[in-house]
Image (cartoon, rainbow, N blue to C red; front, top):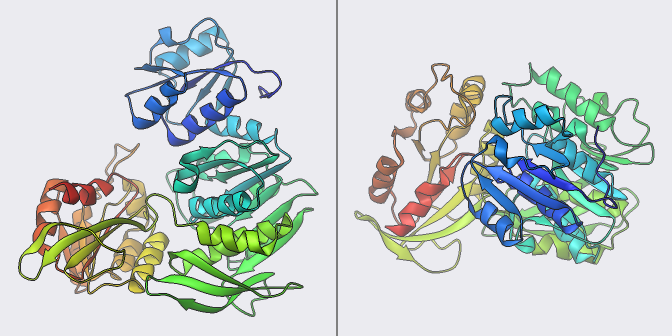
Length: 481
């Protein structure tokens, strides 16, 4: 495999450079003196940012984009073998790396390389770790899967030996990594268009854990079923975290309480350490577990408690993770009448709009449970399922999770990479919710949903747009009307 060497920068071309991860990796290499070019299907905010930094971006992917001076090509999993650029690179015999392989090669250049994995919570936990490291003055390089306000995007380029990234299990991409510290937040069924079943997924996470060197560290959630099967035989140090007091984990949360916006305060109980009070500024019980993993890593790096506390207090979430979008003015009997200003959490004469990336039943439950502690009269959830495969695999679980909302509005399934509908439709979820006595509605277009919400939403309601597709546009459109 081609080896990325920071001391020997070359010309690298990215096929699909506009992706959130690809664009960030391109920036890292550019900063290290590499010459970068790339291509994508269409212009976007990310490609414009890359062009502003001096990167040549071609729109449309054709053989002519592969210039004579290209020495390495990086491509995403979405690129097929019939892609013109891909064919030309193969013809010329230019070395190639997948996005995951490049990320793994980059990790080799850092003394402490942290990879955060799990079915859920990767972006949030990576972001929490980021704020802690910055608070401690450790100047890390970060690659995160969401937009983090504290670093002004999804990438941060530091000058230290610390590197932190998300590690996604899909297509086993995280098995191309070279971490010195690994985090496993949870292991559940997902991406069943690639994995056979939960046992196949668990086997993949075990292989990920086995990547760690003998002097490395694995932080793992002890609430994962049979988690010792994952850690069995590892030579690295293993640290466990758990929601459950008395579970025998190395780190647990005690004395949990919530403020008026559903954000938790708790004490960290860890063997051999004094209890520490932590206050989070992101809502939901699930974020306690994410914070415990970040704290365990900080302790391993000998970061002082003040920096840990401040880092977590500074974290206010990432884009599309229970993100407050604003408030809409509403009146009884009239619905939404305009946009209003004011503090987050206000319910008088307004509808609070939240957007969330949740697209797995466990994530939906976590978000709607967080909403239960947030100011509201009714929770109106607009859900857009993500992929036909996932909808079919978790159909009953989606129905069950969505019953936690007072009103459910279904948008049509976001197909993403899939073309076979598998006879799945959001209307089927709607029908099952109605059978359970829930108030549920299905609309085939966003414009129909927006018109419905303008009449349906009343003062005091909490409106949540939810899903991994483009459902966020619905809330944004309501603010523009």
